[in-house]
Amino acid sequence: MSINALFLVASTRQAGVLGNTEALARHAAAGLPAKAQQRWEHLARLMLPPFADHRHDLGTYPMPEGDARLLLDATLEATDLVLVAPVYWYSLPATVKLYLDHWSAWMRVPGLDFKPRMAGKRLWLITTSGDRAKAQPTIDSTRLCADFMAMDWQGELWGKGGPPNTVQQDAEAWARAAAFFSALPK
Image (tube, rainbow, N blue to C red; front, side, top):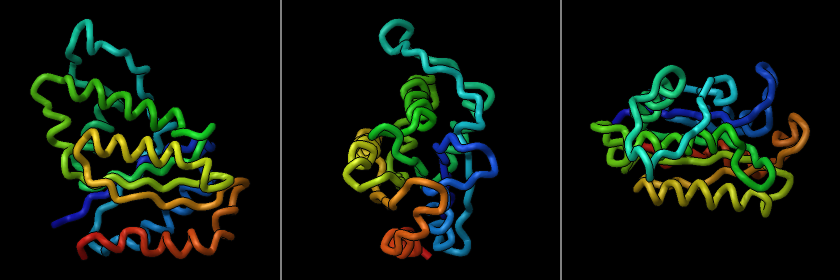
């Protein structure tokens, strides 16, 4: 089975500035099987429209366009979705929350069958925060999304965050990152 990993970077740091969460994710990605495909999308650099909830009035949505369509296609092509999401105010960053909100629309695009096509995909979370307890709401939210979509929750990789280069000093997280994807078929 081929592996197609989609890394969704939720940080809002400027281009060229590698944050702790992305640094931890890139370290973990080095441990992917050699033949695994990797695609990295920085959500803050894409133009996702605001989500409008039409579940109870229109009931359906048109096929997305632009960057939303790019993300939809990448999501459906992936075998593994990796949320690379630092903890912002005890939760997921707005960039990844907006992406997940669009899942509600994609589930209602006639003929797309988004939810059944997501079932069985693997969902992973890589996150950093000042301390582990502050990451728990982010972890719980991501796991619940996996459960709702019948995805295979692979767990979280948490590391100590803060100013740039903090996570590299977290020896336990750095070691866990090297083996984070080790359960994947070679």
